[in-house]
Length: 137
Image (cartoon, rainbow, N blue to C red; front, top):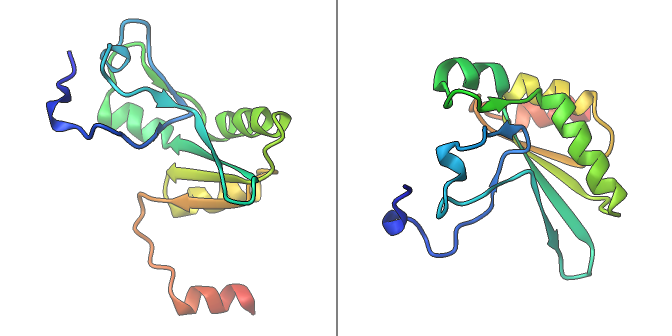
C-alpha cells in the first residue's frame, strides 16, 4: 500500500489527463491521491478556470516503464478531448500544465483551440528578454 506518513494532509491536485492506469494498478490503491484529468478553479469574480495535466507519452512509457497495462495516451488527442469536455461544461479559460518539453508545447499550442495558456516543463528552456522581443517583433 501507499505510505501516507510522508505526504501532506492536503495534497494539491495531481493532474494527468493522459495517464490511464490499468485495473489493479498500485496508483489506484486506497490512500493514493487520485490522478485527475483536470481541475476547475473558481476565481474571485466567479469565472471558472480549468487546469489540464498532460505528460509526455512515448518517453514516459519507454523510460519510466509504468506497470504493465498502465499507458500514457496521445498528448494532443487527450488534450482535445478534455478541452471539449470542459468547454461543454461552460469553462472558457483553460490552462494546460504540461511536462512534454518546450518544442512540443509550441506544437501543441499551434494545433489546439480553446487553450489560453500552457505552463510547460521538462526542457528547462530559458525564455528571457530575447525570446519576448522576438515574439513582439
